[in-house]
Image (cartoon, rainbow, N blue to C red; front, side, top):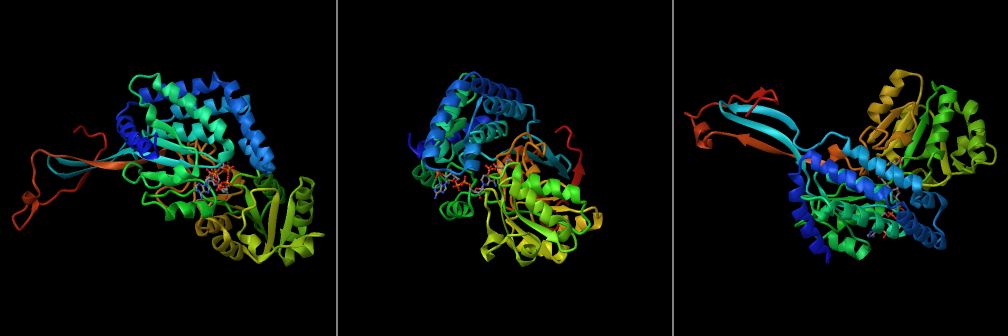
Length: 434
Ligand SMILES: NC(=O)C1=CN([C@@H]2O[C@H](COP(=O)(O)OP(=O)(O)OC[C@H]3O[C@@H](n4cnc5c(N)ncnc54)[C@H](OP(=O)(O)O)[C@@H]3O)[C@@H](O)[C@H]2O)C=CC1
Ligand SMILES: N[C@@H](CCC(=O)OP(=O)(O)O)C(=O)O
């Protein structure tokens, strides 16, 4: 099948999905989860081939960890799908009701976006997450994962499609997979059928997508995430957060890349914290003031402040005050996730108000920026766009709305000119029967 044919069938599927009731969608999700659980060996075997390929290509260890799938991971993929089934249906929610005039009532109701093209990194667990969120929100999806994960992705998508096809009324074309960059290029031309493209990847890749399509793009790009340790920080909290944000999963886009430390707390905190990082294998670089506090610290090149390492490397900078920290983050960050550690509420609120990022945190690790941990069930990714969705994108980010106007024969002429009737524009309760 060509990509154009796939996109056309996705469009048809989306029209069917949009009218499916919640119970049918949940049955499809349960079948998808069961299909994965019952085929753990096939998934793990496909993943073994992907891992072999990646090891031959010398892929970095954190990226191998992101790619690897074992039985536990398959079970957690299945649980993830079930948890999406357990979420409230985001489609058909009344978002406001206005009486324009007697017997002329306008209602805003949530509805699916349509067809989503999702391109993402070599992370097989992203496949069921994105597919289940799209299905629950009534959208068809065309998936493209990273080349290192292609065998795993194919088996997972095939299993989910077979599960969907076994249910009456649920179109198999709800979930489709493309595998090559050439197909991505073709997909980007399908503005007739595809309503939103979600690229997850480097800034260059997201820019490439934006420059090669007329389809709206919801970019999920790099995370140059910061932890700022304020002068009023609790040292133990600061240490725990700074270590977790870098070490808990260094390859994630929400991992720490630049540590900013207030000059008044730096001498007490940095030497010991640097030792702890080094004990865990983290390579450190710093500005001149950090270098004066930490033995053998290499001076950071100017470009380091704009670098996402995605690995066991960290840049450290000592700042004069919170204003300097906020300024640094707004200049060098990527609008993803940034944290302040402080015991001073006023300082924390200033930081959270003035840092222009999708997720701003107080006394918590940047690694919390995740759809599951935020209670969204799962995530299609973490948006670094400002519109239409920001930060971890769950079901709410996958619906739009339509206006439904309930009349009884009125025309605009009735409301025009000097003799026209005035509008009432009266808000009504959303459960008013129409
Ligand atoms: N905000 C978020 O939710 C996420 C952000 N990221 C960010 O992504 C970045 C790097 O991740 P990485 O895994 O290396 O991802 P890449 O940017 O290398 O690749 C991601 C996807 O884009 C595809 N791709 C890349 N370039 C092109 C191109 N020119 N044409 C068509 N397809 C292309 C890849 O395909 P192929 O493999 O076939 O080359 C893959 O499917 C990091 O900055 C990370 O923070 C990653 C995950 C989630
Ligand atoms: N949701 C993820 C982070 C986002 C993500 O997909 O990151 P990545 O490891 O770059 O693929 C998590 O915190 O586990």
